[in-house]
Length: 106
Image 1 (cartoon, helix red, strand yellow):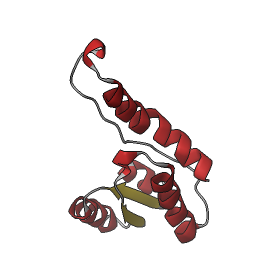
Image 2 (cartoon, rainbow, N blue to C red):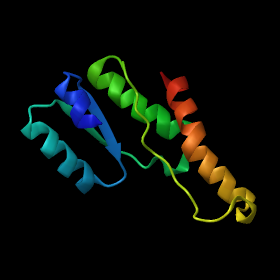
Image 3 (cartoon, one colour):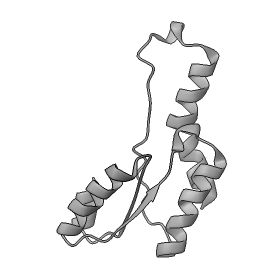
Image 4 (cartoon, rainbow, N blue to C red):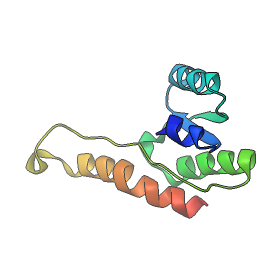
């Protein structure tokens, strides 16, 4: 997705928990002359602060966000009945609420 958007002229900001993953991804993108900002951030907690700081870093660098692709998510590998309330909070927080918090941070 990032490569396709970059090939169409989009300036990219990508985020991951692990810096070495960002380094590898950004190196591949830059080899094809795609502009990319990398931000190491653990969004697993799905807090409003995490989303706001990520959005803020992108806005500080580029001044605006035209397209937001949320490719974060998690599963527990258990049936719905076997999920504890805490497991549901984590899954829904990361898969659903992080997107809402990212939008609100703009």
